[in-house]
Length: 87
Image (tube, rainbow, N blue to C red; front, side, top):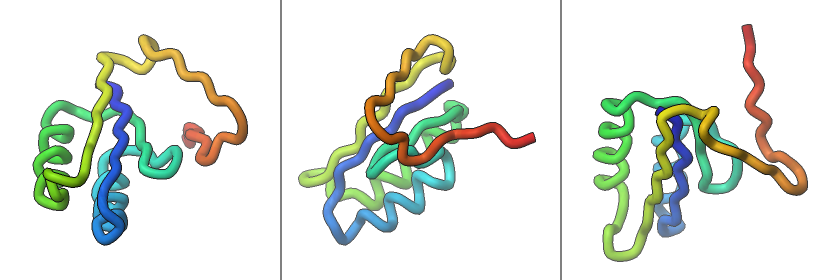
């Protein structure tokens, strides 16, 4: 599945959340990630994220689509991290 993940966590937890999300997805902008991920990997990511988060203060939003081709993406302004395919 194709996922866009957005988080808003307390300053003390930002670095840990960034590191966790980079293990599973591609960073595209501050606190925003995207990429292909399996259901099991997404479950793991959610589990680890919950452990890092203060559930009363922080938020994590996951948008999931079966495939990237069903998602229209428009970038206005500078793209912070281009996702290129390397062979």
